Image 1: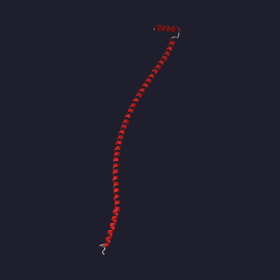
Image 2: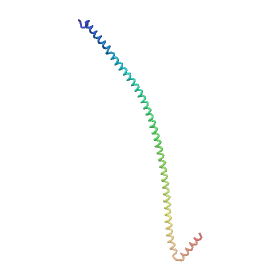
Image 3: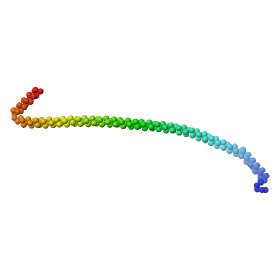
Length: 164
């Protein structure tokens, strides 16, 4: 018996064991294995289908979010433009109000200056009149030291008053 050539009895029993194992596997093992492989294949196919649907939904969500972002950007630009217009309008209104207020203050100052000028002129006139009367009184007292001159001056003034 050589090491490389098996005996017929060994070959028979090996063939019989192989057939029994093959039959048991064919009857009970392979259907379970094939069924498991088919389930795994179905699960993978279903997972791929769900992943494609999720990708489509994600693409739709991305498109929707892009549209929302674009709309928000447009609204932001509109708000910024409106704010700039409001700012320029407020500045123009403030300038107009300041100009009107300055004109009122200038006019008030002019009136105040004119009033003070008139009062000063009136005061100067009153002082001139008072000084003139004082001077005239002193001059008349000096010239009219006697009674005859006083009577003559009074008569002269009466004549001038009655003529006018």
